[in-house]
Each structure stands twice: as C-alpha cells, then as structure tokens.
Amino acid sequence: MEQAIDEAPEGHKAGQADEGVQEILLVQASPHARGTTSALTRTLAESLVPSCRGRILDLSSLHMEGCTHCGRCRRAPFSCVLAKEDACEAVFAALRAAKAVVWVSPVYFYGLPAQAKALVDRSQRFFEHPQKLSHPAPRMLTFFVAGRPRGAQLFTGSHLALKYFCQSLGLNLVCACGLRGLERDSGVTPSVQAEAVRALARVFPDLVPVEAQAPRGQADQVCQPGFSHLDILWSTL
Image (cartoon, rainbow, N blue to C red; front, top):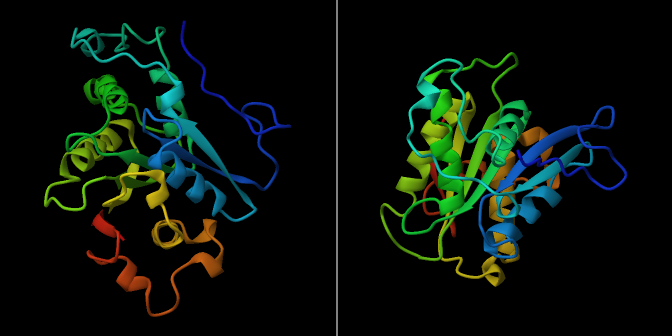
C-alpha cells in the first residue's frame, strides 16, 4: 500500500494551512532520525519567521524501494510499477507542490545515503516522461553535512545527484552548501547554526528574521568558499 507522508502540526488537519501562512518543506534525508542532519534541520525550521511554517519531511520514517530498472516507466502510462508499494510517489508530490524546499543530507561514501539515493533513482519516470508543473517551480536550497573535515570532491557526488533529480522533477535548485567536520550532533554549535541560517536567508530572505541574517557588509562573505564550516558549493544567486 502506498505510504502517506502527511504529518500536520498539532491542531491542524493534514493539507490544511492557516490563512496567510507560508509553508516551507524541509527534507531531513538522513536514515538517523536523531543525528547531526536532524539537528541542523530542526535549527533551520525553528529559524523561520512566524508567518512561515516549516514542515519537516523525515525520510528516516518512510519506506522507499530502489529502482529495478525494469523500463516500465518508458511506456504509457509512464508510471512506476512500485508506485503503490512505498512512499516515493507521496514524496515526489510533496516536493513538486511545495512553495520552497530545503534539503538537508549527510554524506556517506562521497554520496547520498541509500534511502535518499533510492528516491533519486525512482525519479527516473520523470526523466523518461517529463511532467510540467502548473505553478512556478519550487526553489530549493541544499545543505550537505559531512563528518570529514577535508576532501576536494567531498560534496560533488551528492550535489550532482540532486542537481539532476531537481531537473527531472521540475524543481529550481538555486544554491548548494556544504558543512564539513560535523561528525556528531554536538558539532552543530551556535556558530554553525548561525552560518546555516544566514545561508538560508540568502536564498529565502523573506522567510528568515532580519536579526538572524548576515550583518551588513558580511552577506557577500557568507557566500564565499572557506567561510568557517560552511562552503557555498554552487549557486545561481
């Protein structure tokens, strides 16, 4: 049976939003629900302005099968044979319907975790048969979290996988960030949190309080490689 992912805040029905409230989808892409990636995701969700509700989509709580490369999605009706077996289709729908997306993922062996990679592989059906959105493409910001402090290509594999994942789904990936040397959730210090929130503000300035954004004169510095723990890997800003 297809797995649902709607988890509305307490006191709200799934799919129901308060009038005037913007929702931003934060994807927690680690299989570890209480680790470093989760801590950073919660920080970003809590940094949003009151008029914006952050909805965390925790992939660790979902079942997602890997693509079997059966080729069924190449033929009409261009659907996946596993569509009713797991949560992949629900995740695709949530991503494509979002007003904005923040994807936070750990780096495993220079790539995405297995579950997140399974989701990316299952988007093959959108590559085989593109489906245009009826609304403006959701803008997406990615954060990659690595325990290793060094490595010139540390984030390359993860970034390329999500870059083409976004193209297939019709999402607008506007910026990708990398955070190095965060082996444990205790590494998500106030300074690291502040850097991540400032990067979030550069992409979505209307969603982050002014006092949490980079001080005047430092905004350009935040978007330069080598700024403390955080590197801007790729950006269209």
